[in-house]
Image (cartoon, rainbow, N blue to C red):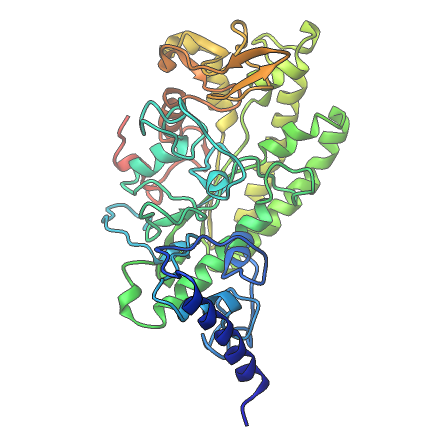
Length: 457
């Protein structure tokens, strides 16, 4: 006697076969929107949640991202017709890579916020970027919050590695053999809340990595045909794990907390960060590259909101309280990096002083060929900040019958700030070149760090 499951599937198939006989059912593609009744892996991939057996046991023989023992209703329906389902949320690690490496690190796995996001928040459909973003290098918006390349892009280039694709970006032949980027704009170290701009906090990014690694090794266990698509166990162990996150924890807190309250919260923030580092170490990570946070008080966004009173500004015209919070955070982050080196003697933990590099750039901007140390290139409002929180770079909006557009300046190479929050490609290149000198790192570069071998700046 047939099981209830078989009977149900026959009933469902009968319904759809009847539909196929009574309607034109030859669509070239299907784009599905829904919840867990038709989710084929989005929640699992996006948030790094794990499904354990016996999920998937009846058809896939292993958890497939579906909240079921096998196929879903619409999967069965699709199978009854000649139309082939083109699912856009492809597991990104299926896609190929074809560039050889010459330096010590075979891959890079990056965690962070918009300072190193190469497309996560855009791929997730949470935000959109419009021209002139990306105009300088990519000629169109690339998922990066800049006119061109980011610091991480220049570092990847210096290591003879391809640019990192966002973990959530499954189109355009992304390259994941040499690593993956889990950074997402607006993310924080602390867990996201209902009011957070981005749901992909550091904890979620680490969970996404764990999902990525587990899936990669699962595929490799099926045969050598997957070798060219995904990193192997050795790559995960020898890869470089980069971190540039924490800025939003501090900057966002100023909208609802005092400076004293923010300073008091820093230990809690770093406990969360340390927990993520431990999880990665337990998974075999041994090379950690940690950026501290930059001078938040020098961003036009923060000056426009918190620097209207001149007494709140320092000698550079930056908001003193924000930079004080950043310095305090960095001091404790540096101490944590030192602690991690003692705690994990078989690991390499490098702390990079981004704050000093960026502060020096703003202080001596003219020496490095810049004309504007603070004012945004792409914005609205004109000097001194050219920043209006109501309209982002490339947007056009109407307020009280007046239409305004945040446009780009004529020459972004003269500006440090791109959009009031993020840096221009030229400024990012300068920061990367200073990182690569090794002078701003603890410990300074040694023969274990490959960046000095081939500088391209």
